[in-house]
Length: 460
Image (tube, rainbow, N blue to C red; front, side, top):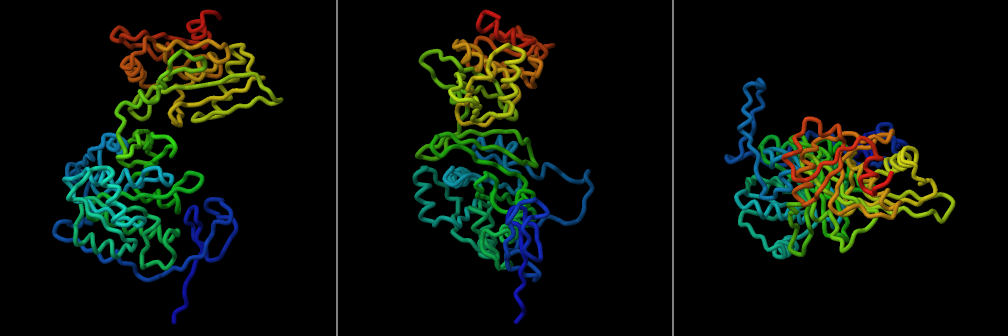
C-alpha cells in the first residue's frame, strides 16, 4: 500500500510547507499551519463534458484585434442594485464570490436572483440546506420560476454530472466551504478543498462561458474564510454587510475585473425577502420632529452614486481624566485630526471634552468630502446650536483649516437639490467654471472653516 502523503497548509494564505512551522513566512500569521492529506494524481475536472448546448472556447491564441467583444454581452439580473455593483450585469464566464456574516441574507439574495431570472436556466446547488428548506424560503418570498433547478449536493463530481445533463446558463453554489472534491482527501472547508473546488468551478466557467456565483463564509475578523488565493482566483468579490438586528443591508464591491470597485447597493430585509432601495438617501436621513444640535447632513459618493447621509455627534465635558474619542462608521484617526484642526485653527477648547461620532444608518464611510460635515456636527454640539435643517455639506478639510475641493461636486449638488435642501456648503475651489444659475439650491462657497462657522451660527 502506498504511503499516505501529507503536507502542511497555512489556513490564512494557503502557503504550503513540508513540516509544521509556527509563523507563516508568506503572511506572517502565527499557528495557522494544519496538516492535510494530499494526492499527486493527475486531476480531471469532475466528470462533466461539454454537450451540444455548451461548446468549449477555442484555446487557439488570437490577436487582440481579432477578439470580438460583442460576443459576450452582459446579462441583466432584474435587480438594479446588483447590476450596479457588478458593473452593469452578469458577464458570461465570470466567477463571482459573495461573502457575509451568517444570517445576513446571502442565500436569500442569490435564491431571489435565481428565481427572478425566469428566462435563464439556473442551477442552485446547496450544500447547507435541503430542497424542502429552499422551497419554504421560495414560498415565503412568493417568487417562482420553472427554469430554476435545486440540487442539494456537496460532491463536485456529482454536481458536474448534473451540470452535464442540465446544461444550466447560470450556476449558484451555496456555499464553497461545503463542497469537497474526491481528488483531495482533506475535509470539506480546508484550504486544499476550497482551492481545488474553486479551481474546478473556474475552469468550468471559463471553458463554457457560464457565469458562476459562489457564496462564501467569513471569519471573525470579517475577511472571507479560506485561503487568500480564493479571492485572487475569482473575478469579482462582493461583501454583504449590515447588522442582523437592523433591516438594511449593504452590498459592497471589494474586487471587480469588469467594473468599478466603489459601487454600493442597498437592500431592505423584509419577511418576503430583500427589497431594493432605489433612493437610499431618504432612508439614511433620520426623520426628526424638531431640530437637534450635533446633527449635520453630508453629500458623499459611493462609486457613481451620490448619497446624503446624517452625521451625529455628541460633545460633552469629560468626567474622567482622559477624554474619550469614539466613532462608529467613521475613521477614528481622521476624527482626531479634525478635532486637532478645530482646536488649533478654530480656537475651540476640545481637549477636555468627550467626543462621540456616529454615522446614521449603519454605513461605514471613508469619503474625505464628509470632513466638513463632521466639523459642522462637532461645532453644533459644542455650541449647543442646531444646524439648519435645509443645509448640507460637501468638502474636505486640510490641516490649515482650509476647505478643499472634492470630485463630482455637480452630482452632490444635484442630489441635495432633489431632496429639497435649500443650501449646500462647498469649497470655493470646487465651483470654479461651474454654472450655479442652473441650480435652485443656494451654493455657499467657502475657503476656511471660520466662514462656515459665521454662516451657521452668526458670530466668529
